[in-house]
Length: 412
Image (cartoon, rainbow, N blue to C red; front, side):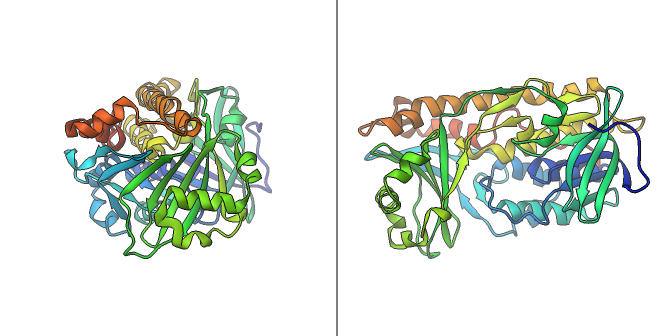
C-alpha cells in the first residue's frame, strides 16, 4: 500500500473520481459522471475492449436507461439480435420461460450485442464530455492512502507509472477485483455448483432455432443466436472439466450435436479443446462495499451467476444508482463515507434477491438436470408454460429486475 508521498519520476494526474475497470459498470458510471461535469478518469488495463466476454445480453432495463440518456436511437443502430420469447426443451417437453413482449417498456426484448460493441458505444458517446477521460493500457496496481482514507491509485502504463489522486476511487474491476483485495474487503461466497464451457459454432443467417435452453439426458446447454454463429454455453458440474475431457473430444462434440441438432452441420468449427473456454462460475458479494474514499460496484461488489444473463444489467443499474446518489457530492472533497454507504443500501437488496433466485434455479433446475437423465420439467415451469400471464412475471424478473434504476443525475 502506498502512502501520501510522491516522486518526481512518476507522472501524476488529479481528478475528482478515478474509476478502475472499463466494463459495463465502469464505462456507464464514467459516462454519467462526465455528463454531470465531474472530472473523471476511467482506467482500462487492456488496449481495447475486444475480448471474449460472456455478458452479451442487453436487457430492457438497460435500454430504458439509454432512452433516458437520449442514446437509444443510436444504440439500436449497433448490430444486435433480438429475442422476445425465451423457450427451452426440458427432456422432450418444450417450455416457455418468459414472454418479454408483455413488458411495458421501450424495448420489450433482450438485445444480444457483443460487449465490446456496447463498451465502444459508451466510449464514443462519452468523448463529448470534457470532464471525462478514458485511459487504456492503464492498470491500477496499488491504492494510495492518506491516513485511513483512500486518496487514489498507482497505475502502470506504457509510458511508465502514473499516480492518480482522486477524491473518490471506484472499483469496477470485476469479480477478481484487484482493488477490493488491496483494500482487504471481505467477500462472502454464496456458492455456485456449476461451471460453463463457452464456444462458438458457425451458422448461416437463414438458420434459426428459437429454443434458448436445452436440458436432456443429464446435460444442459444455452444457445445464443449471434447472426452468423451460435454462441454456446455448455453447463457442467463445478470442477467437472476433467471428467468431460476424460470422455474424449469427439464424444463432447457428439453430445453437443445431439443436444442441439442445429449445431450438427457446423460442429467441426470446434476443432480442439483450445476452442472451448472454461468459465468458472462464482456467486459472491462483499459484506461492505466501501471504505473512506473507495467504493466497489458491479461484479467487484457482487459476482453473479450466468443464470438469467443479468450481470451486465445489474452492473449498469449499480452505475446509475451511484451517479444518482453521488454526482452532486464532489464539491468539497468528494463523497463522505455515509454517502458511499447509501450506494450499498440502495443496491444490496437487488443484488441479494437476484443471487437468491439464481441459487434457487441452480439447485432446483440445473443441478437436477445434470444428475437426472429422466428429469421432467419442474412444476413451476409447467405452470408458467400453461398460463401465459405468468410469462410476463418471469419476463419482468429477467428483463427489468429488482428495483430498476432511472437516471436522475443532471447533465452539466
